[in-house]
Image 1 (cartoon, rainbow, N blue to C red):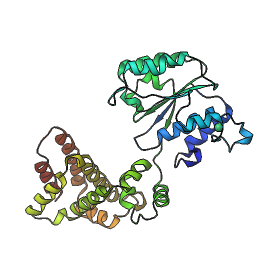
Image 2 (cartoon, rainbow, N blue to C red):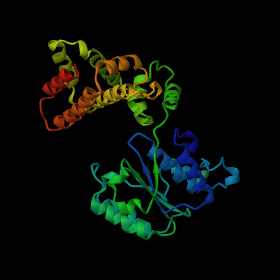
Image 3 (tube, protein in one colour):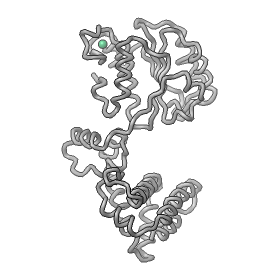
Image 4 (cartoon, rainbow, N blue to C red):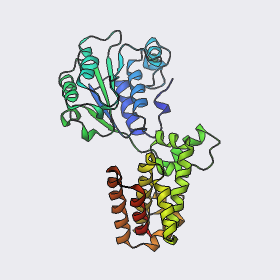
Amino acid sequence: MMGFRDIIGQDSIISTLTGVVKSGKAAHAYIFDGEKGMGKKTLAAVFARALQCETPFDEREGAEPCGHCHSCKCAESGSHPDIITLVPEKTSSIGVSDIRSQVVNDVAIKPYYSPRKIYIIPDANLMTEEAENALLKTLEEPPSYAVIIILSDNKDRLLPTIVSRAVCFQMRAVDNNEVRSFLERKNPELTDTSAVISFARGNLGRAVQLSESEEFKLLFEKLRRIVTGVRDMNDTGISLAAAEAAGKKEEGDDVLSFLLLWFRDVLFLKAGGSEERLIFFNEERELARAAAYYSFERINRIIEEIKTVRSRLRSNVNPENTFELLFMNMR
Ligand SMILES: [Zn+2]
């Protein structure tokens, strides 16, 4: 059974949460905040199981859920009556009726057999304002047995009154070396993980997803070729590169993220930043070359232009022309 020990790179959160489990004094509301892929759902599931586990601590491994009591077994099979994960009716938003039927009205009913009733609300940023207000009512006067775990990608977009009633934890970016050893353990056949690690930026879920994607590998190679070659391209080369970059609409965001991160690294090196802290840590030579070629002013201008391209692409302009202009300025 999944335990705290299986969660990588979130040591300080885990040490606080295991303390909570052992003390038996859980708060009524928690917010786990961090982008998709950082392990919020896993952490919430383990925390909930650990809180509900029936085995006494002297027979458990620290605060870990024991994995064999009735509560743990129910949780494992997803049928624990006192661990409730919100499932909204629509996929695009969490409406007030979802919060009312699955949290507000339900919390009034005492736990089925555990001392606590735990609610997990994934994708909380999808709550409508009405839904948030309904949830707030429960957070203002929760029954003694209620624990509500809110998972958000950006807690700043939740109602401040919700945030102020919860204990907030910020998921941390996982250290590159930890991401690397995790990927290598998961798939010993992976040879070069540096592109994936650079791009995932400490997001373990994203690293796993990228490491399994053949498209990502091709995209990375393609963009690397463009940014390192653009300074020597003639007009035809620029047009071809623009066509390549604009080729797949669904890749647009990744293309721009890559360019933005790349030029941030160039700027970072030019400003005397240390090589160990580069995002593209494996590309130090090419980045140094670019840092020598561009002035501070130009790098900043390119970064601004990439951001402009992002908003232009959202408003349906011709992507090929937009990239062509960008690459010309990069040349
Ligand atoms: Zn147990």
